[in-house]
Amino acid sequence: MSEQKYWFPAKRYGWGWGPPSCWQGWLVLAIYFGLLGMDVLVFPPDRELHLFLVFVACLSALLVGICWVKGEPPRWRWDNE
Image 1 (cartoon, helix red, strand yellow):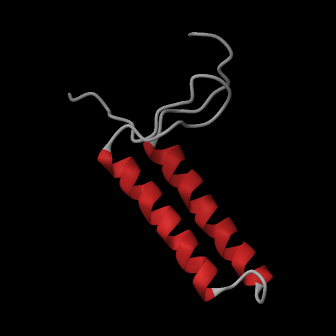
Image 2: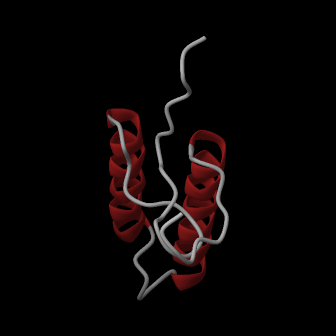
């Protein structure tokens, strides 16, 4: 069996994920930031703040979901473990 490669390794301290460890993770982040940029153009925050915030929340939830599925299982890390 091949060893599972995580797209997003766990942070060294705290809870969550650090920077991507492979091209797939970097691609996900690039798409995320590209869509955030598109959001600013489609729903300008000064005119359509509620739609802008809904889009940001949905994109962020999708990113966390991808990190949850393709990342190292998150847990609290306090020391060098």
